[in-house]
Length: 314
Ligand SMILES: [Zn+2]
Image 1: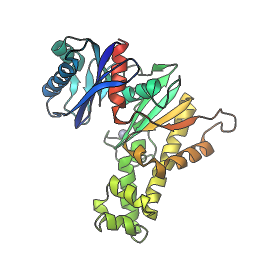
Image 2: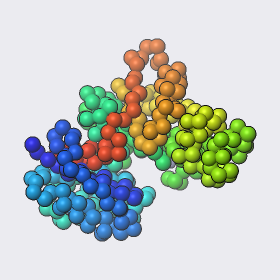
Image 3: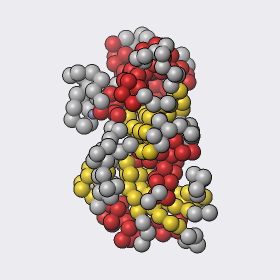
Image 4: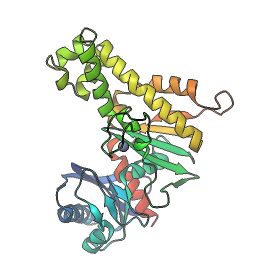
């Protein structure tokens, strides 16, 4: 069976694996990302590819990169959490390993994996929303990954949700990811705990008594113990998520949404509310066939599986 290698390069970890035609990971490994040096990142990728290729015939390599990738799927124009600026990643890695290489945005690679092998199997029109620290997005239309004119499409986290709202890492104000992500969850919880400490009694206790120490883990634990402030913080991001999905439906008319990322691990506190609110507000409701909202199935390996499968299609 033909094998390809997928490598998912994030701000802190490089996750790589040999993947077969059915999206199964045959062997995988993990390395820290030498984030400050583009040369070292390329060398690390080459090392993991060589290691995984030992004793195997590998056809091609797919790289999932946390950044803006150009329309030729070769150059990483910019990466917020890595030192890549106009980085010719495809050529560098291809020269080092002697195999065909394709570069894809990591969220796009995840969406592709979910559409091929995960929660979106069999769907031709799908939007994948990765709810982590921020929001990542990937869109599959007519069975193909939608990349936009310059390869920079599907940056869903940066749709403006609130005019003049919270400052985003991208430099704009009020982006969706400032209201509907893991960071937003923590922001909401801190605000409530500061304004109404009585309502956040358990949350504050878990966080050592001060709102500044509240992180996602504390909010999840407190929600599990019924803390009203933690539950309200989850409810807030559920509302913003539902609104964003409804807006995306108005534009793209997908058959299904797949929600993944770190926040989806605490889905019991927000997922039903997203579905209910979405059904209540989506335009054309009552006349539109139901759009399914599902949780992602492939977890943290989605990026490398998707990148490997895209490499197969070179
Ligand atoms: Zn933004």
